[in-house]
Image (cartoon, rainbow, N blue to C red):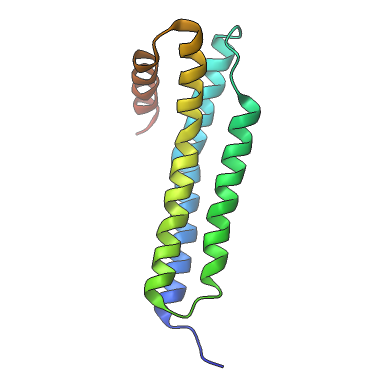
Length: 127
């Protein structure tokens, strides 16, 4: 039985660490922002179920990419899976902003200023 090269283990470790960082640095503030917007505008029907399903499914996909690294013996392919996991986590971490903006824009009629305002508020929350 062949041993896995170090690059495979480094790809797995880097993918796990960066995915956790994306979850804490991007997803947590986005969820806080969406929750505060939902509390401030209770008349807007935010698609909470769709947001939860998308985020859970996206992070499950990221975990699948990371688990796939355990079956791979080539470093380059392991790094591709690692990057795919991070990209999946990043996309689904930002998704609630877009879904909330669309829900609010359906009521307000203008999505771009809503997204710009939320991104501005998000920038103020981040150091």
